[in-house]
Image (cartoon, helix red, strand yellow):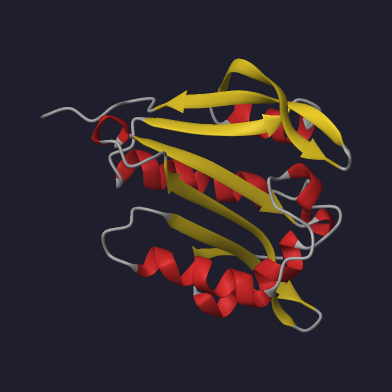
Length: 177
């Protein structure tokens, strides 16, 4: 089935609520259970502001009821400090039924291309739970290295879990010709 990657819009709020509310998805992310379409609408509308550098993507493919969201990924500013303008933070999620089918790779490729070729990003950062081997393998495939371990980083299902800090530097930073 062909996969389409496109920029998310506020019309995708229901799809984001469905994906981020999936009990197989939110424990692997920093998302909380019991999300809703109303929570996602303003989040997805905010990146449309011209001065905001965030990029939120959707992966979709044909399903039983037409196009369905099977993944999402985003780049977000690492902070407001001018000294960190060259850094963006990455997040990604793929529906369980679409995992191991190239969706994560397609989203990662789109994010890395955008960061490297258009957004003047030198450094991409992310955190990933230390027990999320498939995600760690995906990030390594795209040049991310583990830079450290955050102990007791987040609460997940009643227990504190560690995460890795991972980052990737632009493989060929732009230069004057």
